[in-house]
Amino acid sequence: MRQLIAQILILLVTETGFASQDPPASAGAPKLNIVLISGDSAINNIKSRTARETIVEVRDENNKPIAGAAVVFLLPDSGPGLVSSNGSRMISTVTDAKGRAAARGLKPNGQSGQYNIQVRANFQQSFGQIVVSQSNIVATTAAISGLTAALIAVGVAAAAGTAYAVTRDNGASRSSVGVNPGTPSAGAPR
Image (cartoon, rainbow, N blue to C red; front, side, top):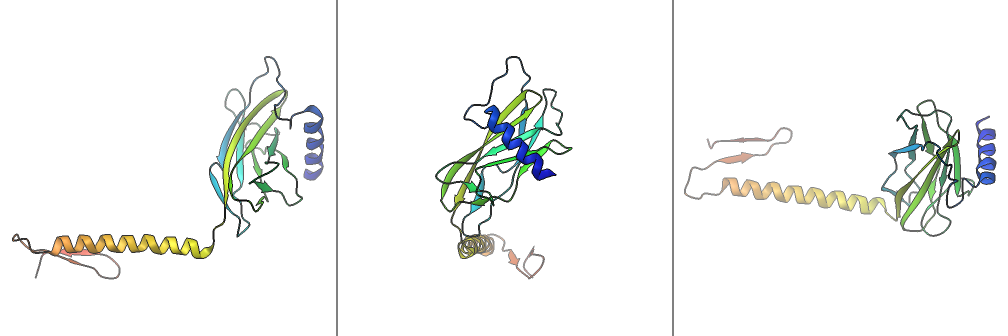
């Protein structure tokens, strides 16, 4: 049933020009507010073929969530971007009871770089749109592990520097720092 609704939406969106570069303008029609819940500035990993879901909430002019609004996620036609499992550059769905819609099952298209996803919503002659920015990168587990190791090394070096500064004898009273597995402790000399 959901698939049938999505197919009808695609047909309606295509026929009305809703998916064109500029959504139809309705004189005096209330504007829908689209609030980005998840996915803005997301970095998608090409190597692992994973992409972060883009989730939006559609609200009316009184800022109340709208259930049953048609939402279209328009993916880039060329360059870096995402692709759906069926190769489509347009994902259409309907908002749930909380007014939320998600672009699910997308994967990076294999090209690195920044891109925009256009999100458009339609409900009873009201329209709204936003742009969501994301990036595709080539990242390996080794690169991520290397970054983690570098951050740990910086932390250890900082701790060693602090311990040296605290324990050096500068003619004043001397204190020491004890480092034990578990809870760190510091105290006066014994």
